[in-house]
Every structure is written in structure tokens, then in C-alpha cells.
Image (cartoon, rainbow, N blue to C red; front, side, top):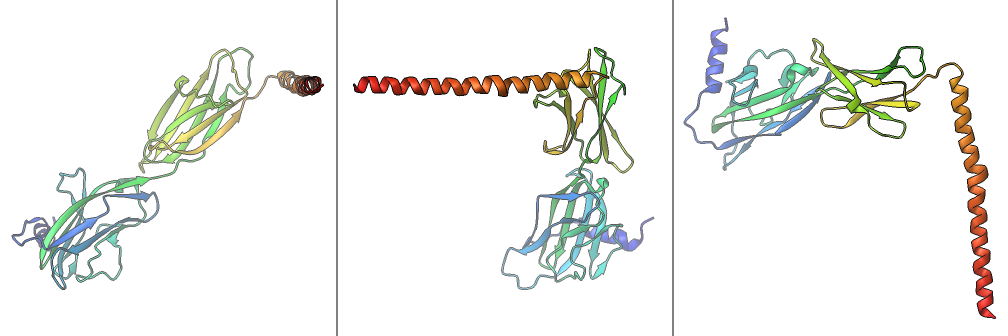
Length: 285
């Protein structure tokens, strides 16, 4: 059961006073916090009239499940006394007192559970105000790992590439690309699991029916905003004897380009130049 002092504090913070609003609470509308680090919800109290030195009587920081929710008290100050804060919450300025108009909230060791809406309520001797702000928690996904099933390739048989990336938040996406940067994501299936700490693990399976077309495939992990965070390129293993064959074909193509095509282009250019010079001299005579 909550103590009588705590109940009185919550009642005081939530009640609507009849005092005109000569002060205003201004907060950054959206704040971004990195998982495992400190997060700052910036809020300051500003005077709206010629008040000289307003004195803060009450500050209440509440965590809401929605903007309309009454929420739970995370950090509070009431008439000179700091209420016992929830673990991981404190004023951004360690030596904060009732004369300090910076009422910013500091969240230490940010977790997924800290994501959401927050309300800051301030009552002064010159008026009161409240405002709702948000914290968006982000965690970067790990570099993907890619492996091939089956381990040994059988020519012209079905196979699967599996890509995994974990430790991210919010939910991201795994996409597939071949060595020519064509996307193959529509041919894959992705599974999403969430661990006890709220972080996501992404697993994507790319089916290669009847063998594969390209020697390299890249799995890229994108965050919830669509930004690429990490990627991993996987070079397809080749059956015994096929590596030499493919390398030989590739070598022949390159050799054909440099020994036949390039010389023909150069010779053709020289012939055109000689004809142009001959024509110019003939016209001059």
C-alpha cells in the first residue's frame, strides 16, 4: 500500500489548480535513446509574464501507456521533498532544486521498457502546466551471419541460404541481393522473435530452387526507419570440379574481352582516323 505522503503527492500533482498559467513547460517533442546508454528527456519551465523568480512546488514525471493514460509516477518532487524515484530515473541536473527551471529527466541504462510516452507536470507558485513527450528506444542490429543448407552442394538440387541478425530494436527487416545488386527479398521468408529484454532476432530463409544462379548473395539488415545498419556477403560453395570449370569460363571471357574486343576497337578507331585524314587531304587538293 502506498504511503500517505505518496498519495498526497500524486493528488497534488494531478489536481487542476485555479491559478492562471503564468508559466509554461516546454519539452522536446520526440527524444531518441540508445539501448544500454543514458537517455535525456529535455524539459524546461519558462515564464510567460513578468514574473521575477518563480518557485517550483511540484514536479511529476509519469510513464504513460498512451497519451491519454494517467500513467505511473517515475520521479517526483513536492514542496521541498524529493519522492523516492523509480530505479533508473533522476533529474538531469544532480543538484536540482525548486529554483532550477530545468526539469529534464535522465534515464540511466536505457532498456526497451523505457520506450513510450512520458508526461511532465509542473506546479509553481505562479501557475502550473503539463506536457507529454516521447522516447524512442533504438538498438543496433548485429552484423548478419549467413550459412548454407545443405553443407555440400548437389548440382541442380534445391538449397537454402539462412541469414540471422539479433540484438536490435524496433523490429527491422532482412533483405537479399545478388552480386549484380538485384533484390531477392520476395523469394525469402523472415521470422521475428523477441527476447525477454525486448530485443529482436531476425531470421530469413532464401530458397534457391534447382540450384543457384549467382556466386555471391548479400544479406542486409535494415532498421525500422529503413536505414541499412549492417550486411554480410556470402560466396556460394561449388561442387568438386565445378570451381575450376567456372573459373576457367570466367577467365576465358575476360581473355576474350582484352585480347579480341579491345584490339578490334582500337584498330577500328585508327582506321576511322586514317580515313578522315585522307578525306580531308583530298578535299584540300
